[in-house]
Image 1 (cartoon, rainbow, N blue to C red):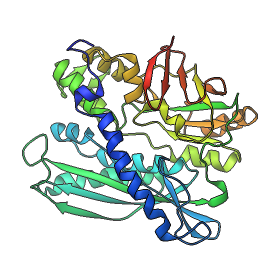
Image 2: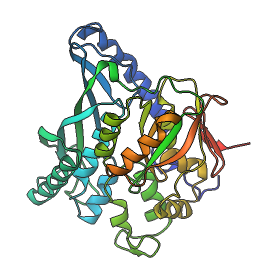
Image 3: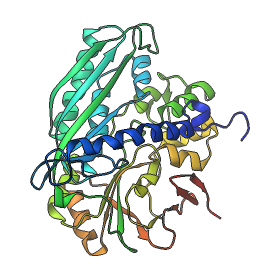
Image 4: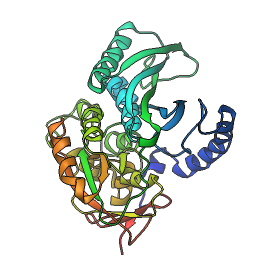
Length: 369
């Protein structure tokens, strides 16, 4: 790698240190599970850490799915643009999309907003986004918290700093939790397109485009058909309606994955000892090509950090694939398509036929040999 080539670590996100920190956290958090009771008791935790959401038993046969997430450094783009009306959509999307992945129906969400300085107009714009996201996901926002923490938060411009985090909950029957177990060779992988960069990898994107590429956020980019800032603030797509329709129509949905950080390696979160061959992905949106060119980012790093055009993935049996596609396409996801298959030949690996990469959760994507 020469000095102009970028990766996530060089941009300021240390995945190795993050993994070590997570191990320190999870080893202690996991010990708390026993405090709430064993399976069969109200409060029992039903899943290990590492899934998109966890499930807590609240009644016989009924679980409460819970997940929490934020928007990351996409907030800095909003601050620099002075445009805050889409960030709330991102916050809703990042949470409800994760809740879907265990087969749950999202019900409601809480938000936490920390600000450097109170600005009623900014908060109203953020709330507009939250409302729009809630309407699209068909959930309520049952409450939240607003904290003034000037000493702790600094923004891209003086006084503009803020952070937003959401916590979503949903309902799932305990006998219908989807974990990605029982996958078999030949199962069908269906992809739903992303709306762009979503809410992951913005640190690398900003470094590549603004610092190394010399772009401005207000600059019209011909390849994008709009300003760079507008493209980066395109809201994360919410997949609730088509996925809930699928869960109602197809009884044997085997796996669901929200494609965020780690890209299609998110398919490997499940327990099945299988791999995935992705041979028919959509063409990546132009924003990813722009980032790669501006930052000299290699293919492996691009597919590890970004969704590269696939925002959500469903795995079903070959027998159910036709019904799954018809349901998804009729419920607001006309882009639903087969992008690959499950394989038992290389367990624990995701093979991307184009651009010729193979990846594991431990090592990321490397050039296939």
